[in-house]
Amino acid sequence: MATGVLVLGVGKATRLMRYISDGSKEYVAEITFGTETDSLDADGKVVATHDMSDLDPEAVIAAAADLTGDIEQVPPMVSAIKIDGRRLHELAREGIEVERKARPVHISKFEVSPTDDPLIWTAVVVCSAGTYVRTLAADLGRALGGGAHLSALRRTAVGPFGINEAHPVDAPVLLAVAEALRSLDRVVVGDDTAVLVARGSVLPAVDLGVSGPGPWAVFDGTGEPLAVYEPFRDQTVKPSMVLSTGSAG
Image (cartoon, rainbow, N blue to C red; front, side):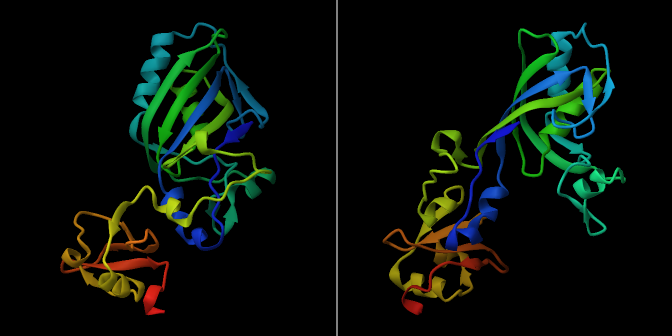
C-alpha cells in the first residue's frame, strides 16, 4: 500500500545518506475515516469502528490545520523503533504492546481534500524525518471524535529528490556522488585549500569562505566533492566527512 521515492546509496555515496534521510519528506496519502486498525494502516486488523457518516468537511480541514507545525507523535507499535533492545514490530507480532514516549516532529503541510466517498479523504503531507503519516491519519480521526486509518501512501519526495526523478527498482539510474549533497550549501575552494580539506584540516571559517550554521559541501575547482564541513569552535570549521584524498593522498 506504500509506493514512491526511495533513495539508495551505493559505494562512497552510502556515507552521505544521512544528509538525505534527515531531510523533509513529502507524501500523497489516502485517509479512511470510521475504521481503526492495529497497525494504523490498511494492512492491519480492524480494532474499532465509528459512525462518522456525518463528517463536517470544514471540521476535517480545521482538524488537519491543528496538526500542522511542531507537534508530538506517539510512534505506532508496528514500527522499527527499538525499546529495550527490541523492535516494536517484533513485540506487536507477539501481541505485546508497550508504552511509547511521544516524539517531536514538524508538519510543514497537511492539506486534506474530500473524495466522492465522504469517509475517504486525500492528503498532501510535508513533514520532518521521523514522522509517521499513519499516526497523523489516526490522530486526525481521533480529533474528529472517531477514528481513521491510512489506506494508501505514496512518497513523492525525499529531501531534494522528487518522484519525477524516480525509476523502477529493476531499472535503477546511478547519479553522481555529488548529487547526494545537493541540499547542502556548496563551497568551491582553490587548489591550496583543497589540499588542506582533503587532509581533514580544521580551518578558520573565513578561509573556507563560509558562515552560518552549516553544514557545507566542499568542492574543488573541477566539481569533485572533497568533504562536508561543519562549525567547530572559535570561528573555525572541521570536516564531518572527508570524501576525497585529492593531492594529499
